Image 1 (cartoon, rainbow, N blue to C red):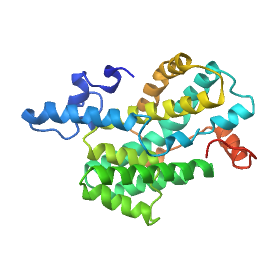
Image 2 (cartoon, rainbow, N blue to C red):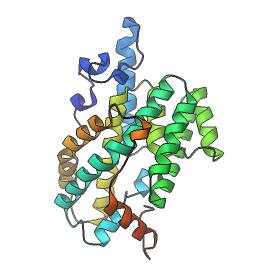
Image 3 (spheres, one colour):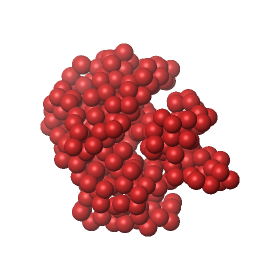
Image 4 (cartoon, rainbow, N blue to C red):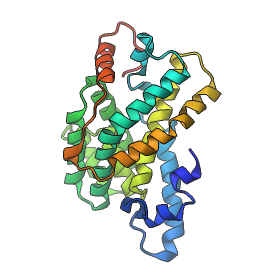
Length: 263
């Protein structure tokens, strides 16, 4: 994704003109440049497919779509991803991410865990809940190892004890806020990470190359932006996802005889 999409060079992103969450709490003009650079670098790290949290082991349902011949090429994949971004991430995952981000920025762990639990309750497929909890827990432990942040450590302890799900989107929102990454940028990170993870899984399931894979990611960028905009201004009570075919095929995947991915 371009620097402009991440807001690296866009003054509006640092000032919060487009999203109040993007101000990232930087009040000292002398430190603003360095803090903004650090936040951009952290956002790029969190969007990196090499982040060791296990997202390379999930297909977010694509494996079953391929098995059912509903996704056969890059065009099919782009169409499906666009739909999921608009109907699941926008009104669902990103709403929880924003609420967790806001809570973490305020130091309010109860608000973060409320977002975490709400997203877990709204996620129907068991595999999706389990994979979100697995990857979210790994991200929390990773951030605990990398950052001396009592807030993240306490959140990780709750997740490890099973007191909260530790769902990945909520965790991402919380750790992004603690790293100074703005709310809108964190949503874009979530969309980019989700899209590249699914495309990577599809490359292992279908016969298309890296150029086609990158074309799918680029084609999905308008849907990413739309998902982010859809999530803005929604409360946890408004968190609703509607991807019935994805839910049905995810249930089929749980009973499949052969599975390359855990979801």
